[in-house]
Length: 138
Length: 495
Image: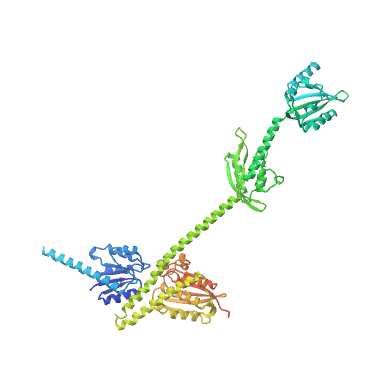
C-alpha cells in the first residue's frame, strides 16, 4: 500500500485529494501547513509520496518544505509532487526532480502522476532487493 | 626787483604757457599774442597784431564769440565758456575761453586779456566716455544686467540705470545708501544679502546669490554678484557687481522641473499600477483556481463515491462555486467602484435584518464560527441595499478567514451623532498597528502579516469605497493577539 502525505492549507483540497487517492487504494495522511508536514515526516517513516502545495501562508512555503526534505538522507526521502495554482514555467523548473501538478488538475492527471511514481518506486525497490540479494550471494 | 623786471618775468611765463593768451585794446584790435596762441591757432604774432579777433571765430561761435569779446570790453568777466575757434589752416578747435577786462587807474576798461584753452582732447575723452556709457546702458538694457557700486568711505551705493529698471525704483526715490539697496530686497533674503556684502568687504571673496524682490507688488528673482574693489594698495574700498532679473528663467526652470516631476510621478504611477496589475492578475488567477480545483475534482468524484459520500461532494461543489461567484462579484464591484459606475439607491434599511440575511447567505463560509449579532432591533441606516450587502458580506467573510474555527464573530452597532457605527469583530490574530490602514489598500494581501487564508486583497478596499460613497468611513481597531474589529459608519435614518 502506498502512503501519501497531502499538504495543503485549503481543507477542501485536502478532502478532494483524500477522496480521490482513496479510490486509487492509497492511504492518505494530511497536514495543513509546511510545519505540520515536517512533523509528520519526522514521526512516520512509511510515507512514500508527498503532495505539497507551494503557497500556505503564513508558515513555510512548499518550496521551503521541499528544501528541508532534500536535506534528509536519500533513503529517507519520499517522492514529492508540488501542487501550484500559479501557472509559471519558472515554478515548474524550480520543482527540479520533484513532480509538478498545476491546479486545477484533471483527476486523470493526478492519478497518472501517482501511478508513475508508484511504478518508479516499485522498480527502485526491485533493484534494491536484487542488489541486496546479489550481495548475499557474493 | 623793479616793476619792469616783474612784467618781463610774467611775460616770459605767459609766453611759455600752453594756453593761448592774447589781449586787445579798447578799439578791439589785438595788441598782444602769446607763443601759446601761435601754437594753438597757427598764426604768428605779426599776422594778427592790430586785427580784430573776429577772424578766430568759426561757425556757431561767430555771433556768440564776438559778443563775448564785446561783453568783456563792456566790463564783464567771461569765464570758461566753451566755444569753437578756427585755426589758420581752417580747422576748428574747441576752446574754453576766459576773457578779463583790463582797467586803467580810473576803472575804465582799456582792453581785454583772453585765455583760450584747447579742449579738443577733453572733448574727445568726454565723447568717448559718453559713447561708452551709452553702449553700456544699451548693453545693460539688452541683457537686463544692472550694475552697482558700493563705496565704503562715503557709504554711497550707486545703481546703473538698468538696476533702477530692474528694481522699479526711480533714481529720485533711491536714497543711495546700502540700506536703501537692502530695503529693495525681499524681507526673507535681506539679511542674507547684507551678510554676503559685508563678508566680501571683510574677506574680498566674491559672492553670488539669487534673491527675491517685490517690484510693483510682483515677486521677481534677481541674480546678484559682487566682488571687492581695492585701492591698488590692497585695501578694500568697496564692493561692486551686477544684478540681473532672472525671473523668467526662474519661472521656466520651475515649469520645466514641475513638468519633469509630473512626468516622473505619472511614469512611476503607471509602473506601480502595471506591477500591481500583474500581481493582481497572478493572485486573482491563483485564487480562482483554488475553488476551481475543488469543483473539477469533486465533479469527477460524483459517480465514483459511495451514496453516503455523494451529498458531501455535492455540497463541496456548491460551496466552492459560491466562493468563486463571490470572488467574481468582488472583482466586478471593484471595477465598478473604480470607474464610478455605481448609482446608489438610498433607502432606510433595518440594520439587524440586513446583517442576519447576509449571515444566512454565508452559511457555508461561516459554519465553523459562532456568529453573535448584537445590533438592536430598531436601528435603521440610510444606505443602498446592494452596497450594504457587499460591505457586510466582505467583513463577515474577512472575519471568518482570519480567525480560527470555533471562535466567535460579533456584529454590533452604536449610535454616534447622526451616524450609526457598525462593528464586526473576530477573535483571530489581530492586525499590527502599521497594517491597520494598509489593509484597506487595493490589492493589499494580509496573508503574509495575518495568520489565516489568502485572498485577492480587494474585499476591504471595496468596503471602504462603498462606505465612502455613503459619506461614511471605514477603519480597523485591533490589539494584536486579541482579534480585530472592523468598523464603518453610515448615516442613521431620520426617526
